[in-house]
Amino acid sequence: MLSNSLPFVLQPDLISNVEALALDCGAYLMQAREQLQTEQVHFKDTHNLVTHADLECEKRLIEGLSILCPQAAFQTEEGMVVGVSEGLRWIIDPLDGTTNFVH
Image (cartoon, rainbow, N blue to C red; front, top):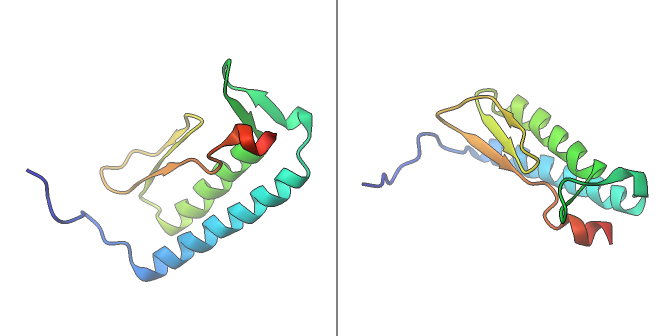
């Protein structure tokens, strides 16, 4: 049976702070795109790219969200898992569409 309630409530101030963090990371990605160098792009497997900007944004998001939600856990697109939580878990993919970003 599915529950109709969450084990926590995202308060408006938390939502505002998370939105500001996301916008900051978006601005960073836009700037990074303009300055992207070939050596900042790597293949994580045969068909998938990862950039320095991807990894830097993941780091920034984890740092910022850890301050806002100290008990939360994090899982990133690049495979990093930080913390173990039965409660709030953030799934982080700061740059969806890395191939388009690179080209």
